[in-house]
Length: 481
Ligand code: NAD
Image (cartoon, rainbow, N blue to C red; front, side):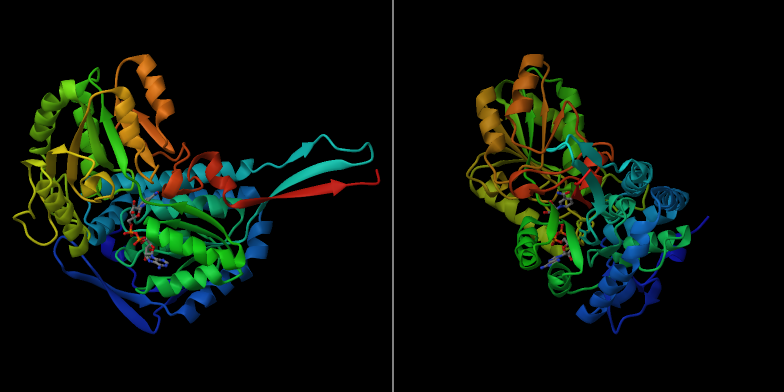
């Protein structure tokens, strides 16, 4: 079996070549502070070379049959799953999440490759009734061209496959810019893609420690026809503005401020389990993590008590150790943000139920925290904490809960627990979110369209809709018949 060190690569991947680059940057383990690797830090010029390689690979790649692309994707999927353990360990080393979560992410990320291997063969155009007896209307669905994928550190593998698998299936080459905290998983994925047999230039990974410079190249180069970004809303807005110059298509998976609503008719034990999964997974560092718990007055005290008992069982530690449910945060800035949200809430009258402090383990470990009696004046009501803090708001009526849930510029994921089926329909329809989970704490799957409304983003990933994002429609009018 391959080990994580056999998959640890410190070179960028451009035009089918592994490149040292002229500069290097350090990747560390957030659980120990230990240096894992010094990785190639590509310059803007080297990134342009990657774009050129992708552009050069495009004509042949788009002409391959769907069946050939499907077979390559399938081989990549099998390679990822065959190396699940090594990839998971590498991910835990550079990102910090518990090993069980890393294994889950490898399987989740691989599922996109498997799904789009199948879907590649179903990219269909159409014929339409025509506007004249001597004419015919044909609609082709064509690959959009070179795709640049910019991805975050919180899901170092799945955010890449969610973009690349549909792009490759559609016939587009890709240039991947992984987050500077987690390039190793991305490079290991590229190695497995190379082994699977993808032609040179079809997949490129440009590692770099100066994202703004690279982002500018990828968004302004006219050879890049589509940007697919996952990350924070402010960076997404910058990239969108930069795309305007070349009228580049863009998909944006941005920040969230997910409400998790517990109504007084809910199954409270199930709601507690759902809240723990959706709040503390990945130490609270997922875009669909619950950011605000909204609990109806009649069950408020009981829910907080049950949640505190369950959160008290979460073991914090190095993700490689058995039984750890919560690893470190990604860096010191992430800890500062959590602490500032806690301080603000406590200053304004919040009640600390548990946690609240950096963990005794030191470094960037943080105690799973619950604050009750939270109000809409506090920062946690508006800002994404991206850490293990559960702020619990109180509400009286269903209308109030929906209004509170929607009182944000974000609209990614929302969760609620209730039993009354009429209420379930009303609330489901009232929530202004791209994704709603009913009596469920985890909703991501390759089978469903993932994405947000409002400032949470543009476009969808997963399902057949995820592939449409990498195609253009070409209308052909055939006349003179
Ligand atoms: P980030 O925006 O700081 O970084 C994301 C990526 O963008 C990284 O690769 C980074 O190097 C790059 N980047 C940063 N500045 C850039 C610039 N000026 N130009 C070009 N690229 C730039 O976000 P993050 O801290 O890595 O991730 C956390 C954020 O991502 C959270 O807001 C979270 O909600 C969001 N997120 C969203 C989804 C989703 O699907 N909607 C999924 C995961 C994370």
